[in-house]
Length: 142
Image (cartoon, rainbow, N blue to C red; front, side, top):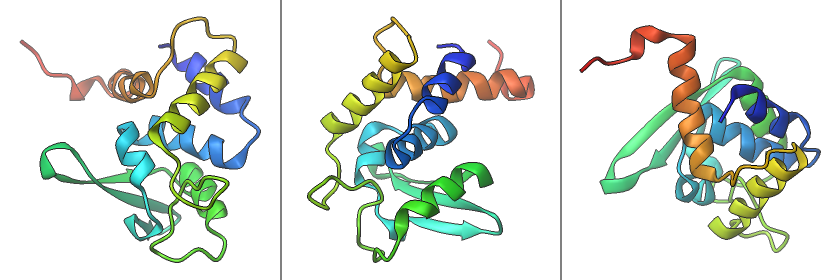
């Protein structure tokens, strides 16, 4: 997936929650299960930016620093929610399901005119690929 395609998906999303979901996937390289399970207690401020701690596959805990521009989009969503509240809430105030998040990503891709079958996992891969393009020193050889 090209960087311009991801950026177009994000730019054309008008719903603040859905835009924050796309930004979180792309900036953090998270799995859909990790994004769906996020609670406010998993987010922590770091100066103007922030950090998200997720409970990943294999019982691992990962902390990911988020850029200030993404952090601001997330913080705006919180309102008066407690630490136990979901970051990405459904209309019924619970966690969005993974299925609902997949639909949000697919709709954003359609809106951006992307004809490929875009998935949440593609955004995870785009995060990794585009990060390597920015700083090739992270690439491994062999």
